[in-house]
Length: 172
Image 1 (cartoon, rainbow, N blue to C red):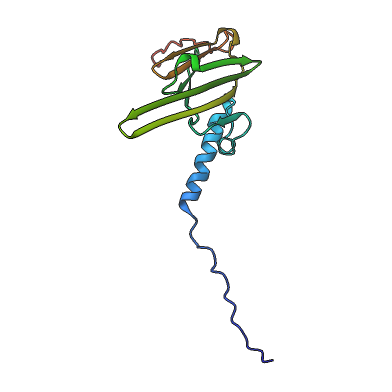
Image 2 (tube, helix red, strand yellow):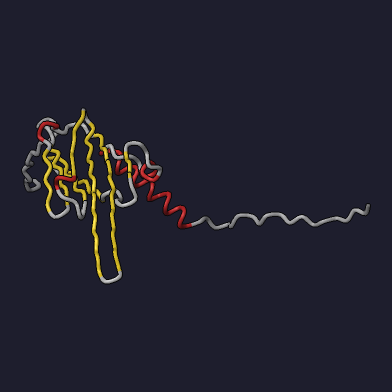
């Protein structure tokens, strides 16, 4: 049997310039992780991994967009839940864990000449947040209007920063 040398191609070396978009994404992930840790929100990577603290059930409903803002009086959380009513959403506090749940059931049916259309969509979501220190759990209030849930998380008196006015004098 004759032996013939076969040329083996070596893989191309990685590009000398780094992937700019991958570096940008990594930095954005880190920024979101640092921002979210103060509110007990799961890290951005955990959100993508569908960690147990954040569940999505059913094909018809995605997780609601959440905004969290802080001021001297406390925190305000808003969740966009279009197409839902206040009876479809629940807010619960257990220990220092605030859980927002919602379920949407929608059915429509149309009968026209030689056509019958029936559509159903169901879905549920659950979002849980660990409350930061200094939140007055007994004074949490939730309201719902125009598809937006607003949850007010007031700070305790000890946690609210005290503002002291400092007199500004002219230089001597």
